[in-house]
Length: 192
Image (tube, rainbow, N blue to C red; front, side):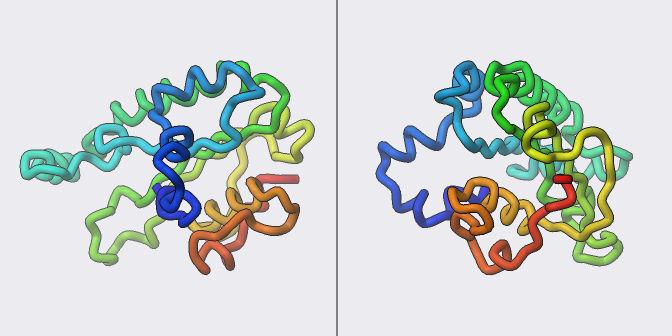
């Protein structure tokens, strides 16, 4: 989760952090009122729901290694349930349906070959799903429906896209985490 590493976050007061770094259980309540809903929310799965498999104890590592002998990760079902619950909470909320331009981006930090030494991992390709609400399509210029882009994007591209989207000044990023996202190509294929 990159945002706690930004200086304006970790240099903030405990009160600020308590008001802005909230548990996921708070999201449903926060989305009930579009006027007070967060402008941006970064949601991360836990070790139980991130679809990588738990690796925090020797038994977890053994379970995870055993799962690599099959065609699925250790906790795909838990991750699917986590996504279904949280995406449904967002998409069924008054904020999502209020007319504000919103988007859900689902991605992963690495592919299924995350213990690879780099041999045979085909470049660590990962999926990214972008779900705009109707207002983002009709008045925000986002594309609707399924499409695939052949453009090269990486996690810095996602960070750059977020930094530009949150900026109060069009064409200038909010603040960059590193030079990697400063010079990354924003994911412009998602807009018409």
